[in-house]
Amino acid sequence: MRGLCAIFLSILTQVSSATSSDVIGLVGYNVTLPCRYDTQTYGVLSFCWGREQVPRSKCSNTVLSSQDGAVEFKQSSRYQLLGRETEGDISLTILDAQWSDGGVYGCRVEIPGWFNDHKVNTNLIMEEAPTEQPVTTDWTLATTGIDEIRTSAFENVEVGDPVMDKFGSVQTMGEGCSRRGDLSISTN
Image 1 (cartoon, rainbow, N blue to C red):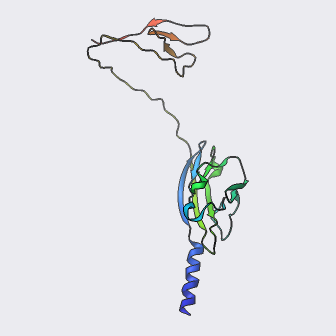
Image 2 (cartoon, rainbow, N blue to C red):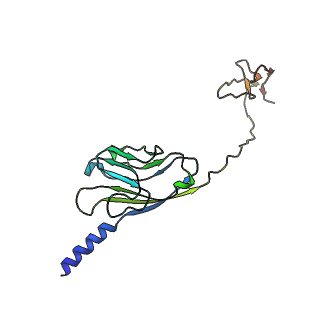
């Protein structure tokens, strides 16, 4: 009788075992929910991702499923597998995540045999993305033995930005207008 109880308890433990974690996502950015398994041991397996905790079988509210390495179902093009599936990285990436994407997601990898599927539950917590603040930096150029420095740059220039040409003259880039002036940095 004790042996039967031990077997039953072992089965219950395996059925209910799943890892859980929290992931913080920013509204308007991509967010990746991790899920990995050992392809060296098991090869490429079938798996699914759902919008609830992993149930006793399959996935609840399936958002993506794969059968032996081929994606069979994808609820939205925003759900992507960007990892290396052949190496066991089946992490779910949600493109352009929104407030409504928050909640629990479950990943189930169907490992052959009874009661041994790999299960991962992830709670996605959405937060507002921080607003970008302009960065200002005060700097001083220190040189030794050089009286004058001339430079030029024309990368990523927008209308209205001052730029220097190859002779060190400053120009303001704009429609139909340009302003020239010499820019030099000298040591005292």
